Length: 331
Ligand code: A2P
Image (tube, rainbow, N blue to C red; front, side, top):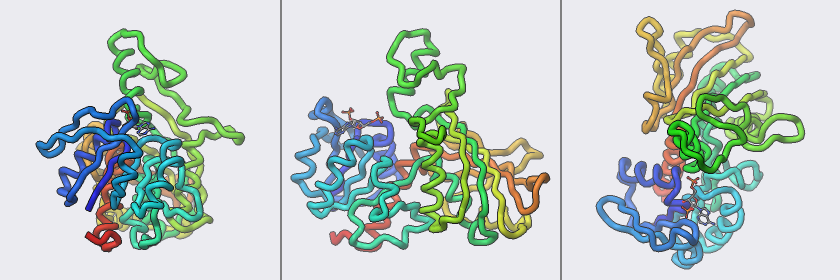
């Protein structure tokens, strides 16, 4: 099994290497790919030194699986070339997510949909993954009617340059800005570009990707996506109206039983999810589970996950594991 990581020097790429190591994913050969400026740079993985290679060399080597985390333009341009050579591409960008021919996969929810014909598989948006993992079992039990979500998102979701901007501001160092305003000591209600309807692209990703992953166009989502000077994970305040009523104890049980979710909800002990605790972990943490007392059949919850982990690297590696387990790649 030959595995390529495209964007291996980036924040998500580095996290993918950690996850591969921790989960002991078996491969025979590892290709680490980045932009032209990084070719030849050395990266250590499992005590072995790897030299970064360029895109064309990786395509020529025809890997079995390539995990892309190098931005949408790179995916649009190169994913089809890998796919043509027989590689399964798992793409972290938004380039292929809403294309009807490409599956949008959270393995715990719809991994079973993958077949050997799915050569470019989309990894959903980080904010969507953590929300939809909690919504999925509740949708099956009570049918989600409408979701109102506000996000509190980590700067790591923007990449290395954003973490640098925040750290520079904290140290009073002049540097490049990736956000239109300072991010330290600030909260910016603007993630990705604004669209014609005055929502941001990030917000509309949550609206559209949720329907696609749940396989239900009737699920209504309205979102406000906000960037905070935080690392470690994205947090979300989620208000969900269901078709039918629920029992709070049963909601807790359903969430606790869901693979990939940890319920962290003991307010008597001040226990609730926070990025500080989610950092570096693979799980999605759910807490502050309570009935919305202003409307029937409606629930409030607080969902936190490390956006570089389940929101990106972990989910992508789980898709790769799924491909291997289904023997779509013949070793
Ligand atoms: P490089 O380090 O050479 O710029 P982040 O989102 O954390 O900024 O990381 C982006 C990742 O995508 C980096 O590994 C970056 O490599 C890589 N990358 C950017 N453009 C390309 C490209 N055209 N081809 C391959 N990798 C790219």
